[in-house]
Length: 203
Ligand SMILES: [Zn+2]
Ligand SMILES: [Zn+2]
Image 1 (tube, rainbow, N blue to C red):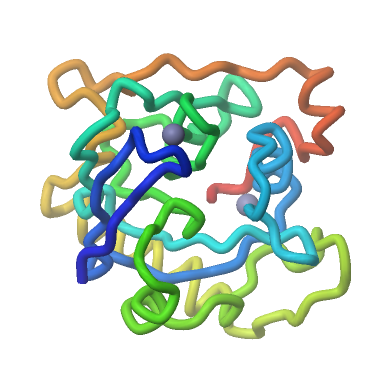
Image 2 (image 1 turned 180 degrees about the horizontal axis):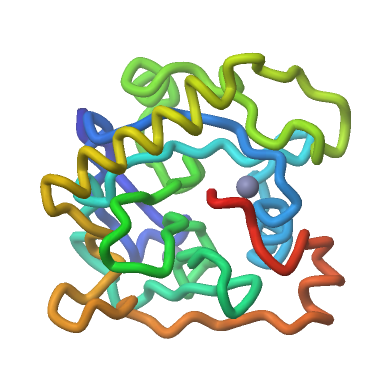
């Protein structure tokens, strides 16, 4: 099911086909929280400091306008790429550093569709919690979190990779490079944002 992607100010527009979703999870890791703080955009975190993310195949993401507004940052020289709209600092998806990795974690904050539509396509939020130990307040652990979240993501990624899919519109198909060079934060910036460094767990 396609749903609209829209940055807060409307310059970036596109579509995410949620038939390509791997799973939906709320991530409480310190790095996702650091990203939300760095963006400074309200409404990205729940009361416990979690980010609502749809993990999906990047082949399902398409930007129709405002691609030139896309930018990305990384918490470290080897960290994942956290894409956002430079115009209004709306997050637009977290990818790996390789054009061959068929993974993007899209914060639902950039979905313009009705919440019920998103729920119907990918399930309700908070059903799966990732890194609950890093939450700002106690959150429910999902005992099958790895099986229903992590393992599902990994197996789907393998299948997509075998089909020859990669990191989609975030990378240049001919050069294999991200379409923007990431801004890498300094150690001081990471510390002030409360990031967990040097490396983020694979997500
Ligand atoms: Zn914008
Ligand atoms: Zn995270």
